[in-house]
Amino acid sequence: MIFGTAGGLGLFLYGMVLMSEGLRKAAGQKLKKILETTTKRTFFGFLVGAGVTAIIQASGATTVIVIGLVNAGLLTLRQAIGVIIGSNVGTTATAWLVSISGLSAFDVTTYALPVVGVGFLMQLVGRTRKVRSFGEVLLGFGILFLGIGFMKDAFGPLERSQRVQELFVVVGSRPLMALLIGMGLTILLQSSSAAIAIVQLLAMGGGFGTNWEAALNVAIPFVLGANIGTTITAQLAAIQANRVAKRAAWAHTMFNVFGSVIAFPFVYIGWYRALVQLIAPWELDGSTVAATIAVAHTIFNVASSFIFLPLARVLEKTAMVLVPERASEAAMRPVVLERHLLGTPIIALDQARREIVRMTTVARRAVNEALEGLEKGDVKKLELTLVTEDIVDNFQYEITTYLTMLSKRELSDEVSVQLPVLLHTVNDLERVGDHAVNISEIARRKIGQKLSFSDNAQTEAAQLKVEINQMFEYISTALENNDTETAKSALVNEANLNKMQRDFRRNHVQRMTEGKCLPETGLIFIDLVDNVEKIGDHLTNIAQAVIGGLQWDGIEAKRIWPKT
Image 1 (cartoon, rainbow, N blue to C red):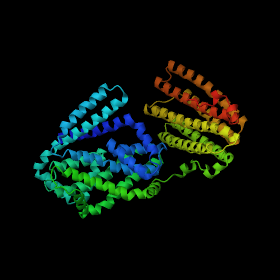
Image 2: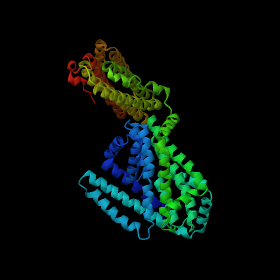
Image 3: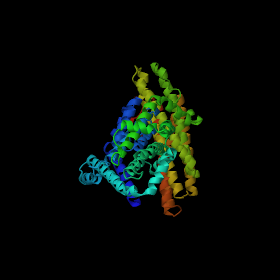
Image 4: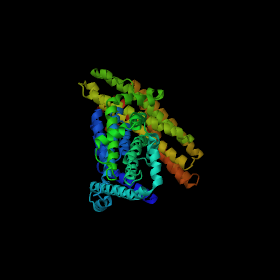
């Protein structure tokens, strides 16, 4: 029984992973596009979340996708809440699939095997990526049902075990214990679908005895616990995400926890079971108990959705209280992009320019955090780099959105020629943030491999830091005051960085040749030099923009386009 359960559960989870991965490869971008474009209203987000989850058979996967989109700034917190609530309804599809295996005329393994064969064949000989991906979906679907079949067979002997049945009778008389067991198992498996499938198959196999009402007494609170336990997936996905994504994860947790808290008193006094039996009036036996548990699961998620969908704004505000914005983050947000000034384009453009100056300061901060983290082996500094880069990305999104809205107004020639140049300036600063992240990754390699720079390399790295900071200083002043002379001074820094790149590369190759440093250290140092030089390239583009009067006609095209 243990071997069959372990193997069957492994196949079940592996099948879910294959299905999810196959669908991601076949239609991942389309799914993301659907989520981005059809979730403007909370109710539509709910419908999309339910549909997508029913297709990919994994609410955790949907939630992770949503958190990724929130982290990237493609979904707002309100949109994410709608999708997450919908995903809880969509995940009930798995319970209904499991209930099919309870039908006496349906042999799971018999039908699963040909699906596995067809899926594998499509994956093996498919001419296009899409065909192979759909083959992976079929293969996962078949393996999932094979896992159900193995677990169903493994639980068969429980019908003859009096001790097991007595244990579950005790659990059934203590709903809170059943809820905690369901929560713990789901946290362990990282899948509420798998946990609920186990309790369905246990009931079908006679693990709860033939007193089917007693079986429901165990299964229903177990379902509530599984819905609480599944929130751990979203919390884990949000660990490295930004603050808004963390709020989305907490909204998911609140929805499931509060829903369970509301339902539990009705479970305790037996009203919930009575409602389930009213909606599912068929006679309870080994072939129908799984479907009855699926009904219980569906009732919980649908009822919770009806309660909390109108309260999406309340969930949003509560999540914002639970995950408050830090004062330092608030200070680094765009704050002067006033929508009502769009009717006065010249003032709106000046507002955007002021925010670009602030964005330059944040990008400089990201670069310095990465350089200091590399110099001192400070992992906390490197983690701060990622946070600061997220702020840079947020600046890019907010400023670009503002300038795009401005472009739709009736503009003077002066504003029309400056607007596209400012958009490219914003993109250059965003690329600076990306290179700061590259440097932080270089630093992590250096720390992970326990490498250290030679004294000469440390001196040269310090020179790079001084030069790029001087260039940032000139760029900020040039942008703030529209100062062409200061912008020209930044070009001197660029020339110095180009010379340093050539000289420092040559020096380091010489040190490696003489055995004064390891090849691994040499590669890390060269990557550092190249990334700092590329930051200088993007700052040069901004300097050229200022020198050209923020007009295309005054700028050499080869100098303004961002370098990669």
